[in-house]
Length: 504
Image (cartoon, rainbow, N blue to C red):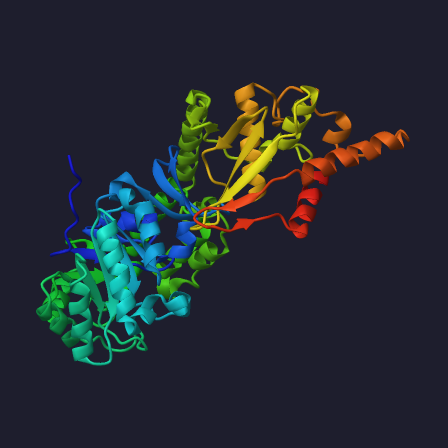
């Protein structure tokens, strides 16, 4: 059965807010009655480098950057109601990111209203308002390229006529809705909102218009939401600061005490392993003028979610969740079967990543593969590495005894990609790879394991070790950039880096 297509008519939404719109806050807003929740603005360049990973322990889908930071985390609970907002100024890159996340979100939104420098640099955010041709190009690319609804969020332009004209042009791209923040680009929350601009836009287009920006002036409680909707003539309302201060503003029965709301927020933060600094930030926004209170100071001093839970008397809950997550991890590790090799043309592939922490400091899979090849009197392994243009990730293929091996996963560096391909080869051949806890195979002698020259005075053997390592470092290992006609031959600098890596 096809998934329900998200509607933007007659909804109340959690607005996209940097550092606020992470998974715990989105789930909390849904609990209290929000119909739709937006994630914080995520920049396309960073997202394009991410790998989609199913987190079976947390029961989430994580989009993880090369430095292992989780840039976006979502779960089944919000799948049909979460809108992914991106910052972009490039149609092709926008489409790459949208296609990466579209199976896990309900819609894609483009930020065209944020006036802050981190968003406007590079022509993103409110900078797009002065470039309607680029707005049109981005939205058309997305509308035709993804299966979920596409929307955008703008600020009003200097004149009513310009604003209406822009939104009418946006409507023609095929977007499902447009959110309008009723302030000019250089105005801040202290400035009054221009409801007349939003009303004019709502009357000029047939797609849903979502009114935004009324938190300080008009929306203080849930009953004010409908007043704001009527004042702007919009189909829907989007709340930012009012929801940030107390997400229970979405609750029809009236707001809950902020202490109870913070407790529920912390439980989600613990359950979904939210970054402690992000948890602290959101709690401080809810504390507001009490941030310097004893509780506020305790929250600010906390460095972990465990310490935050202690501040709120939730130590038992924290410990129970940690025990549950550890049990899930242990069960998954015991049930996982070894990754089976798959043929991709003439290349044997496995989904393998090189984790440096799994190997002793002086040991690498490449070293084991080289020593095994020498023992079997085979030619030295040959590595050929490709670089993917959209995210600069690497994938390497190693040839041993005229057979090719490759990891199906892309790595953050050329060196890691080569190590991953060596692991695939060793595992397929049933040869030890040097992992911590693995029984000593004798392939790599103690001297090499410890990274020391021969101290017995046998100068000839020490020189031979140096020559062997030098040969491994200088072995041909071309890099080919994907989607490019130019090859990237090894430079003297890269050769020096390879030598240093081999000698370390």
